Amino acid sequence: PLVPRVGGGPVELSFAQSRLWFLEQLTPDSVQYSVPLTLRVRGDLDVTALEEAFSGVVARHEVLRTRFVMTDGLPVQEIIDPWPVAARHVTAADETEAQKAVQGEMDTPFDLAAGPLLRVLVVQLANDDHMLVVNMHHIVTDAWSLDVLVRELNELYPAAKTGQKPNLPELPVQYTDYAAWQRSSLQGDLLEGHVEFWRRSLAGVELLELPTDRPRPSRRSGAGATCQFVVPAQTAGGLRDIARQYDASLFMVGMTALQMLLTRYTGQTDIAVGTPITGRNRTEVEELIGFFLNTLVIRGDLTGNPTFTDLLNQTREVTLDAFDHQDLPFEHLVEELAPERDLSRTPLFQVMFVQQNAPDTNWQLPGLDIKPMPTGSGVEKFDLTVIMTDTNDTLTVTLSYNTDLFNQTTVDRLAGHFQTVLANVATHPEVRLSDLELLSDTEKHQLLHDWNNTGHQ
Image 1 (tube, rainbow, N blue to C red):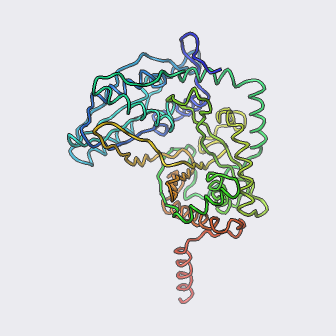
Image 2: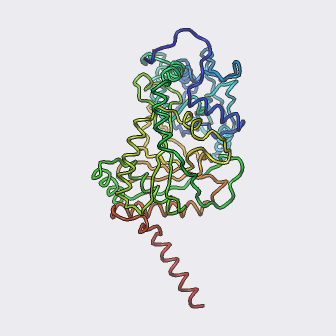
Image 3: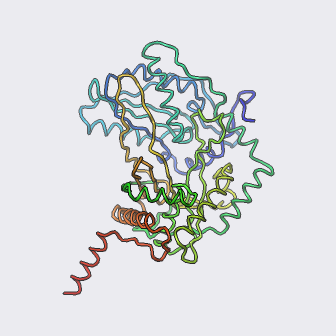
């Protein structure tokens, strides 16, 4: 059972933390594993109450006051006593100066051995106008954790302002309890069963060779940029209908469409795409801040010119099987299947697909209007990450790409082709891979126009 550990002292890292720690040693001073939350805060911000609220979160969650130090040649988690969070306070004359301060915070790496791994920056533009950056290292947080953080600040900030006692339940366990439990429970037959499944599923998996604008550097820099498009309500509705009709999910529909596009781009029929999973399938950890995220690899076999619906059925089976074996940490999988380190690309897959619902992070700090600010964080860990966000009627698709490899125009074109593929399969789910339309109307017009002009010369 997942229960509090007996006795103090350092604890081994969780599997996910171990891999991040290792990657951090390869690229020290990198910010590609920082998770900055940038907010525009309008209203009368009480910085002292905010600091007290953050101090309350840090006191509750040991993971936020953890250092990662070497003991007997192994990294371990060392928990330090609660510390009062002091925000760095900057006054900015204008937006440009404020943005510069925000960027400066995001460009500052964390030191895993020294800590702290949570920093708060408050940039004051006017008495009632601030930018707020909450920056954490991924080794102590993930997307789910940000929702936990907001919920707790919603309770702790007003309590600090009014001097009342916050109403937050005791946490049943801490992250180190989870790490120790994970290490002790995932062994023997259970571990071997998971490993055997993934070894079979990913045997001989090919590297995806997307056509790049530049040769791949010998070491990934993690530099990235993004582009975005909106799938209109009619197409989005069609995709949802197909999901229902084939007993699939919107995730499975999006993944199938993406794998078809990747086959058309590369000519490869063995397409492995990564996808994140919360890794929180135990109630004890639902209210914890920490790094629980795991990664699954969904492999598509696109041989034989399949139809979209054939492939969708395959994706459904492959995905459900993967979910059944989600407890094997991706880190373990990499050690088993791809132990040779290639610093130029990520192991097992190079493209990530994420399907998410619109974030319902609901800030409720009294007297304040809080809106997320786009970070344009300029970081991409893979060759390409495609994020499909369900925004009520429409879908928003964001493509985050590695700028070492791709130019903006190339990814804009790829985004357009993905949009065309989604529109195509929404109305013709029986379409075969070879008949899949990629070109947008604009591109078709351009090609015809340019071809005709060339012909007349």
